[in-house]
Length: 257
Image 1 (spheres, rainbow, N blue to C red):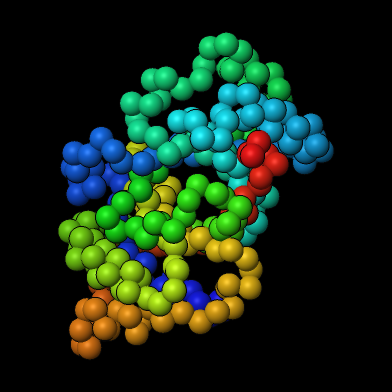
Image 2: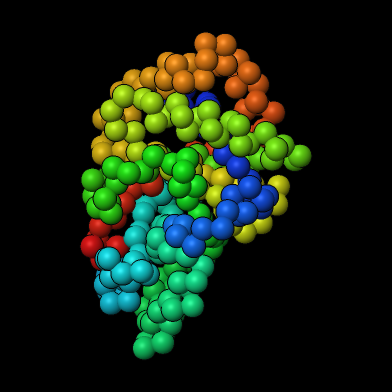
């Protein structure tokens, strides 16, 4: 078991993207990412890599509003697949996304022929007040390994989320050292069969960091009270009906960075 994450992975508190607490916030400065899951044709990986890099360099350059970042999924149910992300942005930015000038034709003719399957296309909005990403400076190479946990919220339990989220956020921010992590809300309805309602992400500099012990429970008790832990765990059990993990590794080459 990964030592640093034992307590935190047991206690991540997240909120279903189809309810109203997060979406009710009237904030035009929010950050959101479009995420596309692709299953590559493993017999054509070299061509796909070259063409995707060229596409991203030309149409989704680093620093632009429509910047693309690519990750390889290395664990979990989608191992071997690729995640192509665009952002950070808002929904309004989609009106000006690259489309003309050969963009769509290039994606159609030079990328998709080497993809076996186009998977989920999702829009993930960062819960900014609850996240702890201030130490990230848009250099994906500094924290190239992402540890994601997806959560399915139990029916009729959205009301339990705000208090749990606040408890968790305060605890993680009180932990010693740098602990970059974010909480992301799926903006489109997923239902209970798909269940990708919320994603929690922790950012790592290297694999060695996975062996380091964390102090989440200690920090939690410090900021939430000595008798808060058991009620917190019961709240988690009631609130989430399913969860699963993935690890993504940043691909500088495919991203065109």
